[in-house]
Amino acid sequence: MESESRTSFQSLNKGIGVYNAKDKTLLMPQLYRFATHLMAAGFRGFGIKAQALETYKGLDFGKAHTSGKECLPCLITTGDILYYMQNEKRRLGENFNPDNYIYLMPESDGPCRFGMYNKYQRMVLDSFPELRRVRIGFITSINDYSFEGMIDGNKATDIRKTGYLSIVIGDVLDRLTCRIRPYEKERGLTDAFVEEAMHEMEDIFETYGDTTVLYDKVLDKLHGIIREAVQIIDHTIPRKPLVGIVGEIYLRAHDQANHDIIRVLEHHGAEVVNTSFAEWINYISYHRMREAKRGFVLSMKQLRLRKMIHYIKKVIAFKSNLVYEQYIQKRIYKSFRSFIDVAEDHHVSHLEDLLKQEDAFDFDIGTEACLSISGILSYARDRFNGVINVYPFTCMPGSVTTSIVRPLTSRLRIPYLDAPCDVSIQPGREAAIRTFMYQVYQHFKERERLTNNHIQGEKIVCA
Image 1 (cartoon, rainbow, N blue to C red):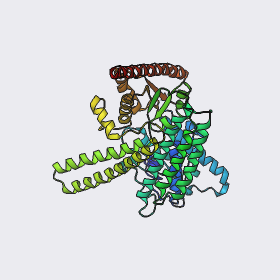
Image 2: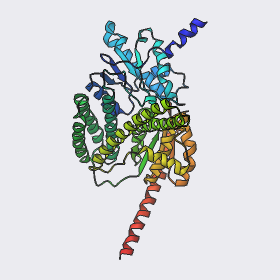
Image 3: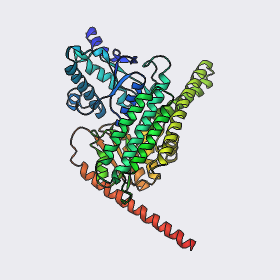
Image 4: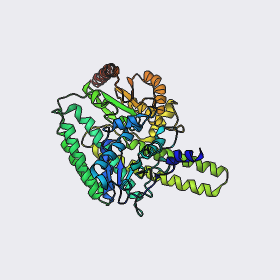
């Protein structure tokens, strides 16, 4: 019995870790599509054979190897890696070597099930004898997603910076798509244009990923892309109601998994702003910095000098990451907004202030609920006309968010919709979205009326 237990649980501590990706194929699950492709290209600039996995095609594999108790992103990413491996075995035949692959599955600590994906997927891969030597590499929120050990020498900091830049540019392409698609001159122009723009950006990240000129090259290309994108807009179409999306980081950006909710909302007359990928990275740096500050204060009270020095180093490291991230973000969005009016990205410390002002939640609790609740408050204050919380069915942070924000959004008088997702067909979803969009449109018209009355009042005073 003891030997059987050892065999059953060996997957939890073998085949998962930090592996050098040199001469390996690094497989990256698709999160935000543009960001994942650009990040893979940036890694290729460092000599790593990285590629973004195709997604949602292996859904049957995912269903077959999950019980239904796992959240939807786990099911999808499990299916994605099994689908890829099946195709690789078929393509390479006898030349297939599982040692050549590292499947990158990040993790976070805390109560979210995301922290257990790579452990569970290790057990799934081990159930196939030919896949037991496929390694699962991970980067973790505990050390602010450091790439130490995955790349030779002192390149870990450089590759993290390149990865973060790819995330911000991916966010910009996402936001650009949502800004121009509801107003495009001809249906389909936006998607075709931005897809081509992504491939052009991929070439730049792959060519200059490991150089000091990457930022300038990316910014030059971005300026050209935005100038061209503006030409797609039909300026005779009036601005539409604004809907903000918050929720689980994977699902809110995965079109197939969330049943194409952004396009559905656009079809019903909305302009959508999706919460960025970069916001999560900012939050992790900010959260770790806060933890390190608390550790320093505690060690100071205990007069433990070594601990104090340890935590001071951590505060400096996490603060440096956060300052760099926000500096890059601010510069790129400032440049972006000089061409076209788009929503700015959230500042994490501002989001925490909003929670404190409303006494709605606390960053000490953690999870994505911190960002979702504060994001909804921010959208409401930024004069959005509606907000949607997209999350996996049974997701704890998503359920916490909806329980807290319902009375808040009622008091703030802004339409709100829960959008829990699983792989099943949701017959009442269309009716729920139509009802929500009716409320959004009424909110939009009321805001317009109040604005017009205010402008007319100013004219009367001036006269």
